[in-house]
Length: 439
Image (cartoon, rainbow, N blue to C red):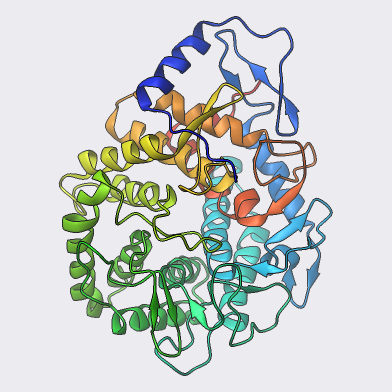
C-alpha cells in the first residue's frame, strides 16, 4: 500500500495559487475517465456539469438488475460497470445502504426543487435499501446487540447469516457506529414515507446502543469500534465516528422520544471535552473503515462528518461550532491531503490515503458548507477543485468508478455512488452555481 506524504494547508494554498496563474495546458492529462479540462487560470473544471453527471449516474443505477427483491448494488459492495459482482464477495450493508438512503432522499428533494417534479424511483430505491437493512441484515434476536444492523457480510445473502463478519470484522462482530448510521437513515426514510417500520427499527437500534453505552474518557469512546454482538466483548477501544450516534439521538428526540436526552448529553460531553481536544494528537480519531483494524489508523471521515453536523446545527449544538468545525477541517487537511494531477485531494485514513470517491466528496462538501456558513473563502477553491476531481470518475453513460485515479468502471459501491451523491447535493445547496458550471 502506497502512503502519500501529508501536505500542509499552506503548501496546498500555494499550489492552488500557482495553478491559478499557469497557462492552460496544451495537452491535458487523463483524470479518471476523461481528458482534464482547465479554465483560463489553469484550474480544473468538470468535464460536464455536476447536474448532468449526477443525472447520468442516477439513471445508470435505475437500470441496475433487480434480483431477490432488491437492485443488485443494494446487496453488493464490489460491482463492475456491467452490474456484475466482482471477485470479492464481502459486503458492508449498514454503511453502504445507510449513506445510500441519505443520498437518495437528498437527491430526490433537490431534483424535485430543480425540475418542479418528483421522480418516485428515488424514494423507491431508498426503500429498497431500508428494507434490506431491516429484513436481511440484522443480528439474531439474542445477545447484547439483538436485531442490530450487520456492519459486514457477504453479498447475495438473504438474510445475512449470524456469523456474517467479513473484511476486518470477525464472525459475530458488529460495529456500533455503523448501526447508528443505518438507524439515522431509517428515521429519515420514515419521515419521507410515513412507514412506521423504519422508525420502529431505528428506535430499537438506539435503545440497544443506550443499553451498551460506556462512560468514555481520554482513552476510549462510549462504544468500542467492534463488539461481539452475543457478548459485547469489545475490540478496539476507540470508534472515531460518534457524530451519527449523536444525530440518531437528536433526531429521535425531535420525534418526541425524550428517553434519549440523558445519553445524548453524555455523548456530547465526551465529544466536546475529550474527542475534540484529541485533535492535537488524533488519538480519539482512529478506526472507522470496515476493512481496517490498525489501532492507530486515524481517518478523515469521522472529523469531516462531525464538522458537517456542527455546520448544520451551529449554536444550538455547539456555541463554539465555527472554531470546532475549523479545527476538524484543519486536522483533516494536515493529516490526509495530497496533490493528484495538480489537484489538492483528501485521502481516507492513515493506512490508505487514496482519494476515494466517498471521502473526497465528503471533504469537498464539508469545505463548501463551511465556506457558505461562515462567509470565509479560505477553503472555497479547495472544495470546488476536490469535487471537480471526483466527477471525472463518472463515465459518459453515468457508470461511476470508485475514484478518479484511473480509467475504469464500478468498484466499491459506497465510494462510487452511495456515499457520494449526498455530498454533491450539500455542495450545490451551498453554491448552486457550481452545479451548472462545465467546460
